[in-house]
Every structure is written in structure tokens, then in C-alpha cells.
Amino acid sequence: MRTVDVVVIGAGPAGTVAASYLKKQGYNVTILEKEKFPRFQIGESLLPCCMEHLDQSGLLDAVETKNFQKKTGAAFMKGEKRCEFLFSEQFTKGWTWTWQVKRADFDLTLAEATRAKGVDVNFECEVLKVTCSPDIQHIEYKDADGNIHEIQSKFIIDSSGYGRVLPRLFDLSKPSSFTPRGAIFAHLEDRNRTEKTSNNIFVHSFDNNKSWIWAIPFSDGSTSVGIVGDKEKITAMAENGGEAYKNFIREFEDLSGRFKDSELKFEPRHILGYSIGVKKMYGDGFVLSGNSTEFLDPIFSSGVTFATASGLLSAKMTHRHLQGETVDWENEYEKVIQKGIDVFRSYVTGWYSGDFQTIVFTPLIDNNIKNQICSVLAGYVWDQSNPFVKKHDTILPTLAKVIKMKEKNADDSGGHLLSGE
Image 1 (cartoon, helix red, strand yellow):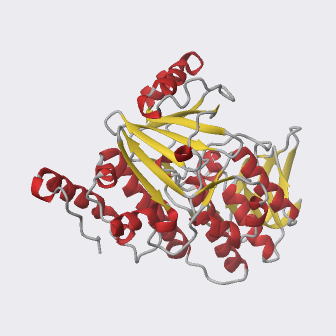
Image 2 (cartoon, one colour):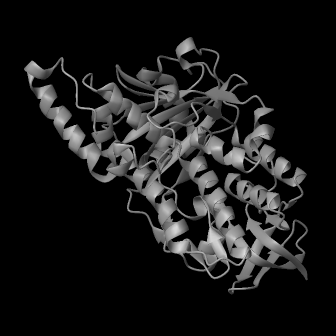
Image 3 (cartoon, rainbow, N blue to C red):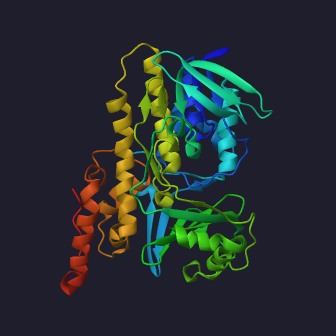
């Protein structure tokens, strides 16, 4: 039986960041990935914060060589209303840009760069059984030919994403508090791009805040277009080969005919009920990272950022653990990751309640407030100096209420809001 220092389950962004960081510290690391790469994955618009995680794990240079679409901000639209956030104008000092990527290419790039560092990356390996203890972890897995293998390690990092290997095997999953939603999406030709639509993600709100469309341009001239709504809406749009989806994006007034004559690169795909959480993020001999911990909603493109953030922190904590330190997984890992998740949870809630949209679409918004919100949208959700992070659970509904009162008062229509300090 083969023995290594760390087994990482999953070769997505969380797993490769964790494995690459640990390899830099001198550990023998093996990745077991169920799928064959390249493989399609959703979550194509990154946030600036994840650039720091890629840099610290030694993967940034490999991604830079691929010339992915540079992303400098995000635009939200609702009918004739529009609000654009530029990451160069954010409150927190950090990265001011990132990329928009086809995940098949992005994830393969990370996996190949991780393998080049000396990590043993194995595709088409399905984990069947895991036994954990404080000192030795035992994994049984099946390879592409159906052969069964066993491997032992000192520690396991589960970065299996939607596969949720350890949450499933150890009964750690718990339902989300969010309304069950789904998404339907495809890649399309984008011959009608304008200068305003050439770089950044565009989000169009409709259906009384219940549904929205994303448009994520790629560097090859194609664009990812997805619709998010309740499960019933998405299920209906997916019927008959996605005909309702195709018709909707071609006729949706706010898209101004941008995709009216566009050909699809592949038939529409859909996912349902993606929001899910966990009872615990760690245990004897293992830790969860990426979507194995919790996935909220795609509205603010937070998925890859949480994957790389948790992947990096889990690797740092694992390094300390393997060095013999007493690690407080509860306070130094789970509560830290949960704080970031909770911030975005407030913003996701605010999006669907309408509070967030009330704030960003008002002409009364102060630039200081906008810059502070921009840092949240850039992924800097652990910056407690930002009032829109520190008071995330109350600030959006409170501010939205103030805006509605001011907008009703004709005398205040030309005023500005306070800075949110």
C-alpha cells in the first residue's frame, strides 16, 4: 500500500492551490480526481481576491500565460438602470483586476502546473471509501480501468466540489436556507459585442428580483450566458433541448438583441438546487475546502474565490498540523471561512430581497459606499475595516430603508447618502 503525506480529493482550484502550496513546503502530495480533464465546469468569472491565493500557491504565472479575458469590474443592470463597479476604485487595498475563464481551460492549467511542481495528479480516480483517524487516513479508490487501489496518508484535504466526497461519506451535508434555485447556461458566439460589453461580467435583473442573467465575455470572442431562477423556471427552460432558454436570451429586451443571431457552442446545460452547506468543516485527519464546505449562489461569482481561499488556508493549517503544532481548526479555519461565507450570504439575501439592488441602482449613492461595496464584490470579505463587511448582516437592509425614504422625499432627490462609516 502506498503511503504519502497528504491526499487531496479533487483537482479543481481548491485542490490544486492546496496541493501546490503543500508541495512548496516539501510534502509528498497526491491528488485523486474523479473526472477526466479538461472538463466543463461553471463558475467562470473570478474575483480579484483569488489572485493572491494563486500567487501564494505558485500558480499565478502558469495562468498568466493563457491570456484569459481580463476582468476589471462588474456591471449590474435592471431595465434602464445600470451600476458599474470598477475594482480599481475599491475600498480595500488589493488586486484591481482578475480574469474571466473557461473553466475547462483554467482548471486544466492549474492541474498541469501543479503536476509540474511534482504533485502526483491522478484523473478518473473515484474515491469509494475513507477511514480517518488522528494519525493515519486510509482511502480506497477505483481507477479508470475499474481497478481498486488503496493509499494511506497523514492527512486528507477534501476539495471535491459538487462531488462532496467526505460530506457524503461522513454524513456532513446540511440543507441550505435559501430558496431552491437553478441555472441554465451555454456558450455563444458574441459578434455583437460593443466597447461597453467587451470585458466585464454583466448581470441583468428581471422578474421582480427573482431571476437574473449573466453574460461573461471570453477572450476568444465567445460569451457564457446563463439564467438563474427558481427550480420550476429553470426546469421549464431546459425542456425540449433548452428551446425556451434560447428564445429568451435572444428576445430579452435588456440584452438589446446582442445574441439574437448567435450560434451556441454547445446545447444548454442546467443544474438545480446547488445551494448546500455542511455540519462541520473538519474532523480527525481531514479538512474540507472549496464547494465541499458550502456553496451559496452564483450571483456574485464567489465560488472560485472561496475555493482558492479555503484551499490555501486548509493547506497552511495542514502544514502546521504536520509540523506537530496544536491547530485550533474551529477558530483558525472553520470560523474564518464561515465569516467570509456569511458576508456573501448577506449580499445574496440582499440581492433576492431587493435591498442590494435598491442600494446600487439609486442615484443617491455616495462614492465611499460604492467603493466599500466594490471591495466585497472583489472578494475581500475578511476585511473588518470595511463597514460593509463588518456590519454585513444589518447594513444592507438598513441602508435600503434609508434610500427608499429619501427617494420618497422630493426635497432630498438630489442629495447623497452618508459614507457608511
